[in-house]
Amino acid sequence: MTLLARDEADIVDAQIAFHLHAGVDFVVATDNASSDGTAEILERYERAGVLRLLREPADDMRQDEWVTGMARLAAAEHEADWVFHADADEFWWPRGGWLNDVFATVPERFGVVRGCWRHFLPRPEDGAFFAQRMTVRLATPAHPGDKETIFHAHQKVAHRASAHVEIEAGNHNAAAPGLIPVRAWHPIEVLHFSFRSVAQLGRKARGGWLRNRDYEPTLHQLLLDEAFREGRLKQFYEAHAVDGDTLAAGLADGTFATDTRLRDGLRAIREEDGTFALPGNEPRLDFRRPSAAADAEYAAEASVLVEIDGVVRAEQRVRALEDRLVSLERGALGSARRLARR
Image (tube, rainbow, N blue to C red):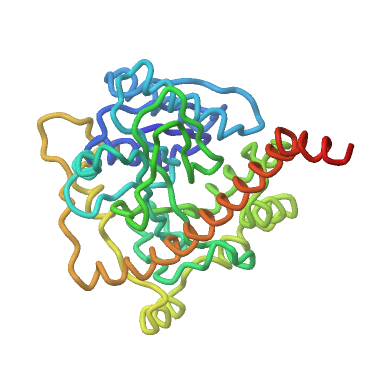
């Protein structure tokens, strides 16, 4: 797993421990100028020999560049078979078996597998650990083309290790010679906990996304930046938090679902002092096969990703045809036309 983190001390210990207990053998992590204790948590796993820590002090969040570097490092120096790219607020949950079991089932001719984002919504703050509070999942995420909402469907990428891979900003796609994606199959749920507290949103707002001139910010980054600059972070958080009445209505109409899997899984690997157990002889997390009803619900959510993938493939074919026509125009076909005019 690669991990790029900046000021994520409230979640990063749980995130790394979870994946090490879910089938990840090694982590390549980059700390981007954290000041809240994130780097010290990463150093603990480095001392344990399960993480390589890189440091990027730059304040312009060049995510695609830094993650691409980690991906290539995993292939060239750490003998990785498969690599996936997680944010600190993501937990990659395999739908039966462990993560390495999922990747072992992929036929040799394919090199890319996608996971499906599943958003967990903010709840009123009560001082509890994020996973204890955030057990409400959005069951009807918006289409990615809908710019009027924050929580939308999207895919995240895992791929066979390659020293030549390029990772797209947001970790949504990977490209390299021979990396053919498996289409219409999302065997991993990416449980996403992006808004956890007012304080965490403040740290998130101070990140370097908007200082990268080449980065196209998302809606939630623009709205968060505006709220931060205007001193409205508390109101911004509360506007998105699910209170009791909203929860009851959402559960009744199917907009929300109660999902305690991460809460329960983290309890199994959390120590009495609040830290998380390093991998060892203790039992790994249990990823049971979902029920038929849960499979149907998941298929409905993931179907929009299948639709989008078809549109993207069509656009790629059109661009390839246009590039081919331009090449022909500049080459032999263009020369023939010029000769004919003479």
